[in-house]
Image 1 (cartoon, helix red, strand yellow):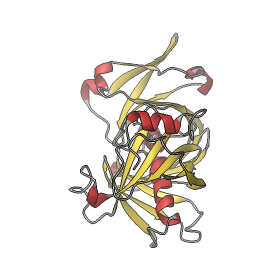
Image 2: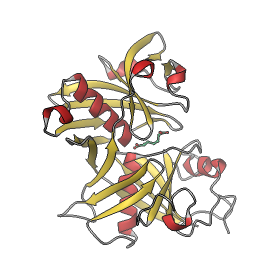
Image 3: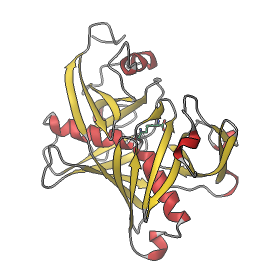
Length: 291
Ligand SMILES: N[C@@H](CCC[C@H](N)C(=O)O)C(=O)O
């Protein structure tokens, strides 16, 4: 079974080309692949399947050719992965499956577009459209994030997947993040959540640490960076829909920097690196359902 390894701002993925959708990739398979000692090692898996042959994608595809089947390192399924989407697009181009300047991909959160850099489409940054952020009203809007004895008010932001964004004085206050922060009320996130801790770095410039649902602390989270950008913009009194102009923030993550823009129609786009670092063959028997 062939595989590739890639990363976007050091959020790393095992890519499994399963174009005809033959694999029954179990949670155990994914956990074995992502294991950093006994497996390839990664924060998640991107399985590349033709949209037409995948039951979750065929109805939604609207002409899009590829479905990104994203799984967290513990084998759980997630709706979206922003860094994964850039890496997925890079894989499609690297494999010669896409030749044009952009590609539309089916994800569990809907259709998402990736655009390659005009000057260097093979290695340059990739820009992905991430849909609009949804900030729930009412009881679900204000949540609290706690780590040990500290807690912070947080913003509930949905980027297709769930986020709790807490502005803190110092990223070190989040501690080692070996365990998931406690988020209250738990009922605000029936499927669990990703948690971002954020500090200011300057004008329209923030930095974050993230604890990802299903993967633990990672070096970057694309959907998380987008959720942070929108929460920071609102906190700073900026709303493109009201102001009539887009706004861009630089979001530093432990693994690099992402540039994120919210357009007047609410669409969030993110630009950042997408790198393939290795290609190889999995040992026979690593995946339970391999032919
Ligand atoms: N690292 C990803 C997000 C992956 C999914 C997340 N852990 C979840 O369960 O929602 C990103 O770059 O967005």
